[in-house]
Length: 483
View 1 (cartoon, rainbow, N blue to C red):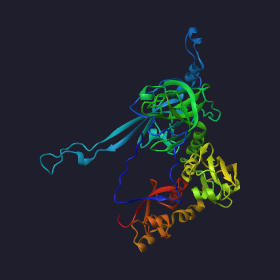
View 2: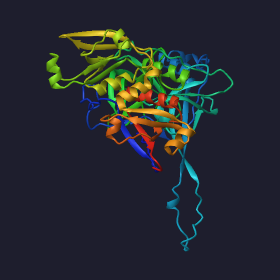
View 3: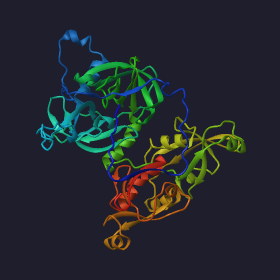
View 4: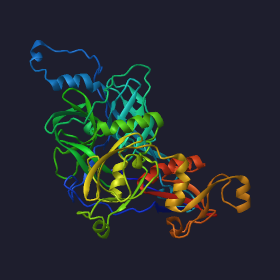
């Protein structure tokens, strides 16, 4: 599993809930059973890859081999050269307090205060002739240096174009000066249970390992400590540590998914893959903008209590109740109304407001979002085309949802109000009985970070809040005086 260690200085970390956030949903038939762990298919170590050109590698071998040349062999010969090895290095500072003293209590032993590197290993696949490599976000997480090794054993330092932790995807870019073998993205919408699939990767550092199997199931929802994987493909093609980020291919050699996770424990041949149709939306945003543009529907939802369900004559006790619809927003245009009870988003079952928010994070701006909802005793279905969150409404939503106004700091403002910073963004005022008020925020507090994004300007604040509004909560670091 990928774990994130955080350190704090003389600052205050605060967790802010934006609006109503309900408890997580209970287990369902498509979720991982209790007591079974999921492991991300990445591994420590180093390795290399071999192969030729993914586009026109010549077929070699004797006439006797011709009778054994299967569809799998042809796919591997064509695609394997586009599969790469990815390794990352992370600089870790040695704790100086762990060094030993000499007999004199005033002299250190002189042990070097060097940093060391921790190397992780995963796979990736080149998806275009521009050198873009698609892999998992957890493969390159916290890597200070990312190296991509091609099939001909050439090594290149990769640039991180962008990453999305929600879907666990990342896009890298390498510049070789030449056109690279690549595998264009196919489609996963027409997968058939039982159809043959091929996985290629670098499990345990074993270069270009090929495994085959079938599509065991689609539309799985899996929960790990780090994230929720929705609508993933389950396959019995062997996926092991080091396979993370590698391609899953159909028998025609089309890229249908990115291998991501395996069951832990004693489970065998149960692997999970992010469908390429979901990945495609994320990849397009990462290449164009360096980040995912969150989907906005212009709707607020809340948990459905038993009393509310009875008042709406709703036979179930779970769903997301529409509490507000923004005028002329995407949801209103799509026909959604206040009081509708959303029970499904795409193929995801919606049992709570948190379910709705988590599922919506799998979409980006300009996606068509299929909704199943209940109104007036009838189940209805509709489609809403998502848009970007209106930038001009960010501060308005911050006041309405969280309960504070902000102002950009100038030197004059800092002098007048004795602020601890000469630039940045400060809280101007806080609304009583709001989430911000309840955790003790006050006028004059300086905003340092939101979910790890350094807040230097109002524009940075807006960028950080857009995905936070979609999640329903964010972590805020503030400075008050010297603390």
